[in-house]
Length: 330
Image (cartoon, rainbow, N blue to C red):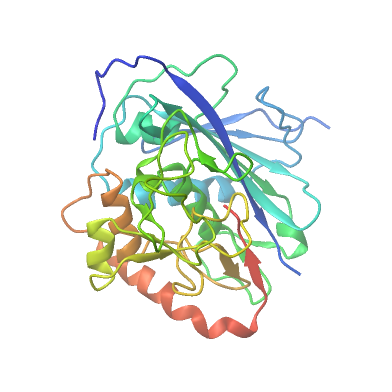
């Protein structure tokens, strides 16, 4: 599916914002670090990149190490060569209203296909020069105290009332690399600039599929089908030959619906829409790696065994059902 060298008749870009919610003075100099195919810029207290976000807390060495480790979870299992370094910007911010944080991902499209900037640069290998006014390929902004619960940093397990930082970061990078769609509930249509590879594998119960600039093909796609299905062959093979249930609740939730595995079917998976206090989900499962392969990534011959064991352990964490859940819309 690589489009390196393809000439676009018309290039289009769009911005998708995904927020994470919790259910019921100038600081240091900006720090820049390289983590695999990413160049990560950490904006400290009082610093901004011009995109409308200003840091409200400094980054510690441990927190920066955590983000680099989460990038490596993805980078260590794929063999795609980036056209240039992916430009990630990171901020701490004092959100209100129980928001844990958010990820911001821009698209590029040709009227048929669409990619996040991260996909386009890394997966497709394009040395892409962003249009004016686009300051990053992907940006992550997190609440300074995890909506009052407090973050767990480092490699140790979180306490029973903490949010695991590495689990949330790895999840957000998953959206940047392709667990993401272009459907807009406001227009009841997919982006006219193109649909993502993730979109292309979605089906509702009637067999309708996404189509650029429309509400679906051949009929109106039911975005609240509860669930919608991901029908990529590798993901299905990892799911016992069955379609993979995608989160599509009966009330559409922007930034959450159609971009995650279904919580009821796949609780405690990395790319499910919520996480429990004290829960650890730092690696994709076999099903999620199948999705990654279906959307066009080239995986190493066999994903690292330790990653798969970690994913299995995370999937076993469903006994924590009595603990409060954190709804992560992104």
